[in-house]
Length: 125
Image (cartoon, rainbow, N blue to C red; front, top):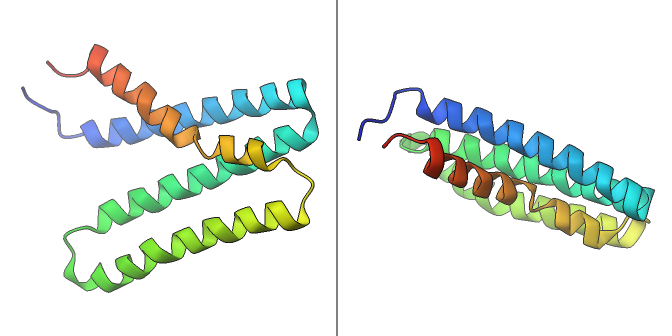
């Protein structure tokens, strides 16, 4: 089995497109079904999911470089603090729906599952 050199870039591009579609459709569905609080909550969760995906992509891109190891460890811990802070602000000071925001956090997971199915169907054999 031969994997093309640009396979990773194509996979990341598809993942970003899938996340965009899932986030847009999910936000629209929640806006129409449950109102602005749920639609906004899902959109915020999806945005945090995008941010987490970007951070993980950046981290994997820096693997192998010895000078970024300490920064990477600090970054791994601090991103969870940022995500926790966002959840706290939503819960404490906002009227948007926390369950919808938590659902939006699964946008990147849904995109990865769709990408796995795509690769199993159309990937290199």
